[in-house]
Image (cartoon, rainbow, N blue to C red; front, top):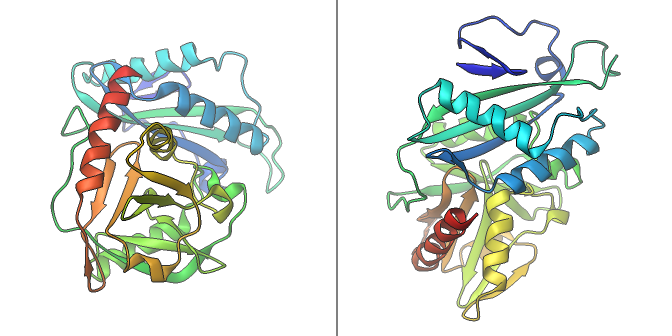
Length: 281
């Protein structure tokens, strides 16, 4: 079942057509959300990011789009798919309504809420081989739009195909200044000695939810130094650890980049703190 504008519909229902602006122009935003036993992880952060992104894209925010209303709509979809007592992945998509060419006829929006089951109720560390490479066919243009979670993900799609064709588990994206920005599906963190770095939003990376949470966690710890600063490709092979963050996986350690292999001691430590933050959220 999917929740389309408050109506619970079978997944094979034809409720969109060829005029959909998300299909035509990528005129849409989405949030990937983890829900465990009826609890939405970091819901306030997801909500505030969605509202800010809608404003940036000049979408009309409906009066009923309160935190409470959208939470009710998410939970209705979770319940309809018998996932109230299971870990679930939720995709909440908002798109501008049909009409117009590049210039919309309206700024009013519709939404779709989809769900699927997850393997674990909490973030877990994946210790399997996770090799990455730079994706250099196309570059991220660092601006405010690149920080949003929009449906314009052509570089991520092509990069994912490149990774699969070449036996990598992921790729790292560069911006047009050749700085390392992020992974195909999340933010990047680098560990060298006691220093932990992640690219700045000014470099063009996604304004990730778990990125934000980890920055807050690191700011309260005395045993690590943290900074938002650009990462050069050269630094990758000098690092002790690299890991990727997103709202569904939590923290994914990178085990290999070219000839360099990495540990996951810091990633493991931070994962426990992230799970604690999720429970307290």
